[in-house]
Length: 168
Image (tube, rainbow, N blue to C red; front, side, top):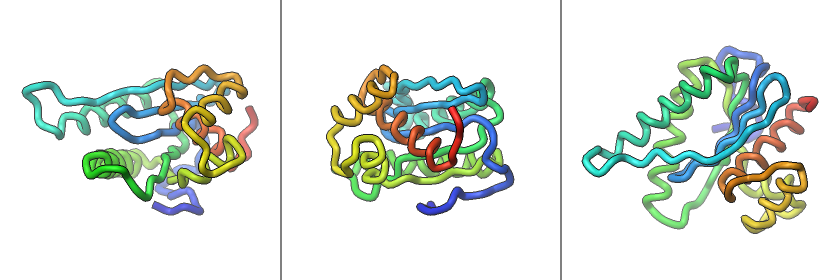
């Protein structure tokens, strides 16, 4: 995933902006075309008698639902993680990223990864900020993130808005 350019696959980037903090508890933030910003977290755990692939099918269904009410999604920004604490986290991140990028390509929605340090530096002024510092920075912007995952998604969204020079 390119760090410096929005990956293009057909659209000009106009429309709603979706920001995602991929993981087992995924943070999301959405700026709709009317300027409304919403955020939260969502989990895609498979049931007791389901295979691990069910999380990705649920993720795709969730993306379809978001697209249904936020259409057109003009661009997607995602936290670009280079290192994970554990194998399972790395595998889930890779799976979510693969499904997200395939879904975005299919729907001709440009996407871009944003390095963790870049997000934290933009939100707090320091690239190694703690989860609580990012949450506090988002509270100062008028948001009430439900947890650090939602705060990260909001931070990605605010970085994207400034990067794209979108007026609020």
